[in-house]
Image 1 (cartoon, helix red, strand yellow):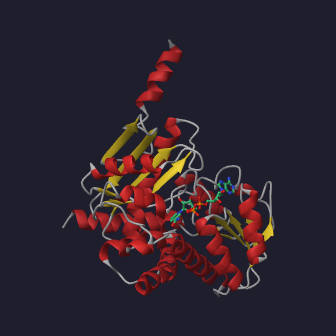
Image 2: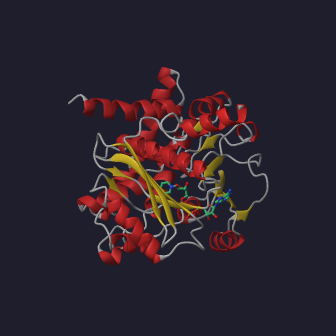
Image 3: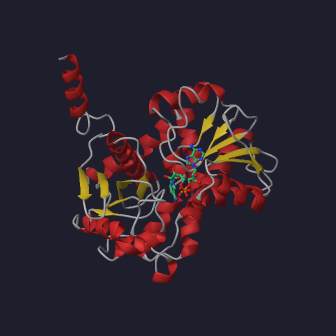
Length: 361
Ligand code: NAD
């Protein structure tokens, strides 16, 4: 009986009362037997515009984990668009499966049909496990897609722009904490050297930083290490001697276990939802005097890039707007200090204020 009650409680909390649901406008479950597609599209808030957010393909351990991930990610997109001054809402999609083994062109086209059925309320792009070529397949079924290859008139892979924004956020953090934004000689750990992480390593190397890299794929690690003379680190990397920790793999790496170990004075990276529990872990970082550059603020370069594709904004302007992440980051640190709140709360408040103002117009 107790087990049954527990099971019902767990099932009930899957969506509406799930902490991550957080007032989502719409959640769409997509299944296609023929292609094996199992996808979930989360539309969190469309006050500022259509919900735009990438599609992630990941081999989730359970369906509940996939639901939680898409809901947390789409909510984050709402705040990312808002704080970046873009007229976009927040949405995100996940496809359940191993992108290296399970992904097929037919599956991506089918996914496009589901996106199309939402008539533009949700616009997709790439995220982890998905690349511009996959977006070409999606495009065959819908116009509500961005991040297409440049050869097709699209803005291409958003990752280099994301990396540039993260680099700007990191420089602003250094300026705030150490009085100068020069990263020469700073020891930086980049965790995850995929699309964003690799370009970040490039920027850091050019800036004269001492770069350490970590990834679960040896092939990727060795290639990036050779290319940029970065040092490979493995195992329990959190307690390494470093000035800056840049999470560029998946989320929730700032948690009860890792925060007490961290030697870094700054956390600034590309991964979404780095704080396992926003309030608790934001506070823990603050108490340990570790300056946290809010993820949804400094990783907005990719979103700025795909936004430019919809509005035909030239590439130079995209980089200029992304550069502005530097100033916004400094403003958020200032607000956090003045109001005695965490940097994450300061960024969240700023993003929410814009949405509330738009709602009351
Ligand atoms: P990617 O898949 O190209 O790279 C992720 C890398 O992390 C891979 O090399 C993977 O092997 C590695 N990785 C996975 N788990 C790991 C672990 N436990 N430890 C170490 N390495 C691990 O993805 P990406 O496009 O570079 O995105 C990286 C992160 O940034 C993601 O969280 C993504 O949501 C976020 N992000 C990306 C963009 C973008 O423009 N691509 C924009 C905003 C946010």
